[in-house]
Image 1 (cartoon, rainbow, N blue to C red):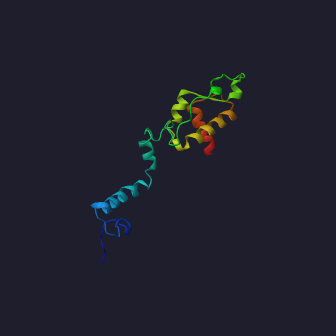
Image 2: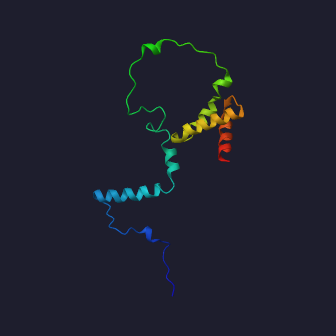
Image 3: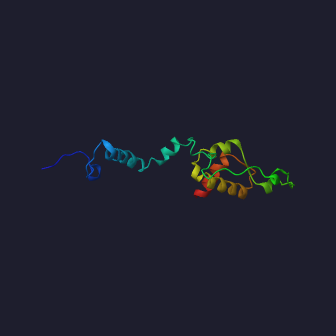
Length: 140
């Protein structure tokens, strides 16, 4: 005798009272939505909220603003001429645009690694191609 049933697992059926109304119902519904999101849709969420005002680089900090201008800061300081090699590689517009596609929480590390790679390779400009070359270099 064979038993035919739906493709189910014991984890698919909650072993608790699952109300849909009131405070406990709100918790149940929230858990039903959040659990699938924590199972691999983080990348989708990063893409959705990439341009959200809370996640952009220029967002104002909750730590407060710096004080007024310093008198010493207004005085021009003597600067020495720096060659292009000493200054390091310069980011092109397409390189910056490609860098902004990277999630904000790893963007700083990607920038540093790409600049290090460009210095090692002797490149003066960092374009999107350099960014992809650095990615391939550090993955290997």
